[in-house]
Image (cartoon, rainbow, N blue to C red):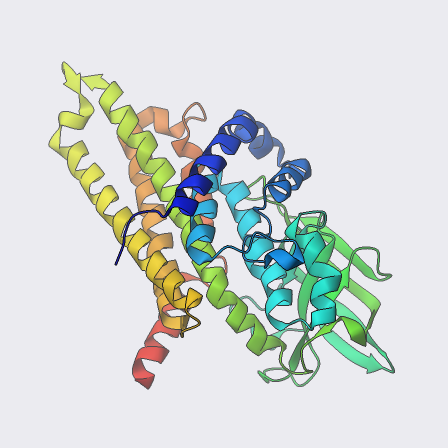
Length: 380
């Protein structure tokens, strides 16, 4: 086992750090407070190859692996988790779904523009009344010759307004049937396909979240991904990789909050010495650093399995669950170490604290990860 960054990872990490310092850090609070989704920033990230990380080079992507992907999401999220979240959603959900389950013709049609961020991608599974219970979805598609007529709505969808392409799972069979759902690729401008309410969120406010609405939307059968009835099964496989993404996002938040707390603890003096010299603070830092290391190891083990095309469902769920819970604990302790200043927007830990909570909810709650892990353990 080699725990060092390889040359590619080191080069990528430095490249994204330099990019983030110049193009993201100066605007963090402006984007956060005004809830601005900076589309042009993602175009720049696309030019650098960070919006098609896992896409083969012959389809316009970077052709990199999951270890490099973790590095990219982590480094961006150390600066602004909102941007890290959008990079993750675009890469691992929308783009990866088409890349994994699309035909060669479909991949050539949509992937090159997604890989360069000429098109921004969205992915829709969740509905108003069906969060963890995706099988109970109410959005339906009825076949009509060479087309399908879709009605319903999806919510909590990243890039629902600004996205050009959306992979959406809809019900084509009976409610509750895991083989009664099918995935389609919707394109902006299709009649009957619109976006709705934008969510006013606690954190991740520069990452756009809104509804997708389908009102007698006619979509060609040529836009169907895979076989009819395979949508839910596809979605679960896509989420295996998506959980590595959220783990990487969580790791970046934890590292960003920890580094800010460590720096502050050395600069802040009380009773004639830096607060880092007090055991109450130094022990917090020790716990934070240890849990971050454990998160990173779990994530890269999951990435290794994914890269080797080995079963990753259990390890991906473990990595996502642990890393997301760690990032919330670390962000909380970072605010505590800052004291009153941690509760103000003058210091970065306030935003890390708000942003962190989504990680225990999105792409499967902590409780759902425990269901996934325990079920797989009991199968053995």
